[in-house]
Figure 1 (cartoon, one colour):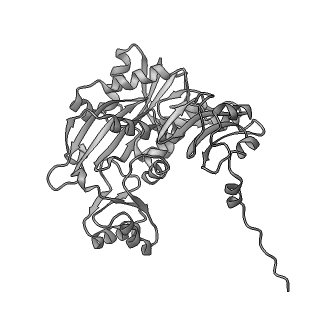
Figure 2 (cartoon, one colour):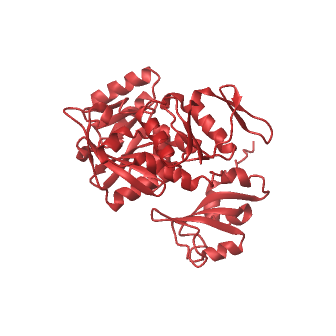
Figure 3 (tube, one colour):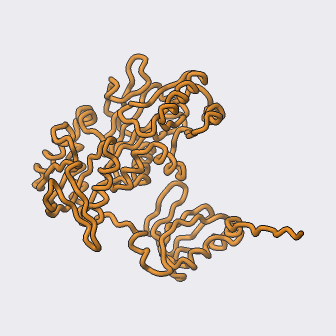
Length: 391
């Protein structure tokens, strides 16, 4: 495998470990500075130049895109995707996880633990928002902070409103989030690679500091996660669209609460803590998947007239409750996956029965899929006809 690691910091611990792990396994690897690329766009010929020369062939890339270059970095990753080069993390996956509001919006649709979170712009909305997440103390977060920077704890409503007003006056967007007191300055960092958690550690804040990040002086200890925490971490990474991720979770009284998902998790802290070859797990995952580049299904089927991809919710009123997957196939609707009770069933069998509250990800005829939505649900979506006043 010929692998490119996209990083503008070739000498940091994580980059050097990834190069070392790739070479140890017999792969050809090169670190390419993300900022040295140029994108060329022509009909049927997406291309990349690196340091003014046309880029040679690579089988796969491993993006290590820092927050400061998110826009340009994800553009480069997207270009590699258009060139059918495998990437462990897609451009959309990186963007999903990088913006805290965006990531919580995506997660909120799924049955997965997250702290109560709100986002406001108007000064008048601040106090009601704080009440809706349970009142003070609250955590205030900048949307694109990293390593604990831009994360503040406000112990009173007055303190919270002052902080929010100050940040908003500086044109900063902030989230207001419930403070999970029972976590007691601790969190879990789980490293997800594909379908498994390859390592996990608990980070513990020191002194009066409530942030447990290693960069903030937090101490670490290896931890063996139970199935609930493992499943939560893996599902969160998949929902974001990431094949490799660092998932940070709080230990809430109701189970794991997702705090943040990192598309470029650092290796130094967790390898030092667990003594595991996590860099090697990254490389092995990429080598196993290199022949299967990510495909944007919607992009591929857009040219198929009358066909599309969509996810449909099956309410209890649907006439398809009690039908089977096979019944849908007969109508030229292929079910790619079935979402039920927080679980994902890929490529469900024809005999599986459809029940209320299922979500089905389908590819097929748009007219046939439209029939899956009950008539009264469709009526709610239709704009009401305006009544004409007769003079």
